[in-house]
Length: 119
Length: 112
Image (cartoon, rainbow over all chains, first blue to last red):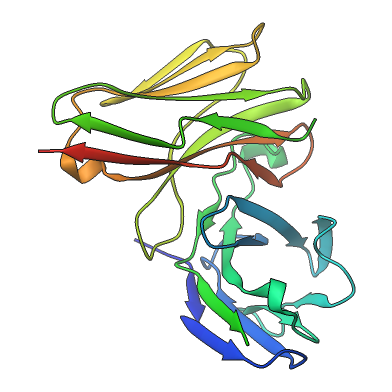
């Protein structure tokens, strides 16, 4: 069964450093997402990406964050200058268009996550 | 108004029992309500989902009950098994958007 993969599984960085989290979405999916989950808290939406541009973003997704699809398979989340409060599990997800192009019930498939620890 | 409130925070059920998790929302523009199951160290996985035009959806041992007027929906797990022990998240999606708003999660423990 196709699945979303993410690398690395755990990233430790110093405050102020840049990090890039990588994801390989399911191959025929066209919509890509990043969510984060601070330890013990709920999953929060960060950004969605379609047709090489951001389609939605939350207030969490400020200028420190950026996303990119550098090639036909990878989808990345960059945090330019990490803060302590960026420590969280970051999940990538992808979905395919529903039949007819409407949103419908487009299942979002989540990857296993990257645990980011900012020291 | 974008929040989805989920209860209980944790739940212990005996094997074979019924697990019930509740969610409530305020935003009437929500048009899609999925439930996700998350095992430790894994990402959330879609369990079952419902649109507001139906009041109930059943898939195997899992049932969503939806009350549009009360703006509440719940997950029922019949014949709960130890393998169902996981964290369950309800979620909702705004009309015309793709971002999911998640509830705070319920840690379910099914005792053998």
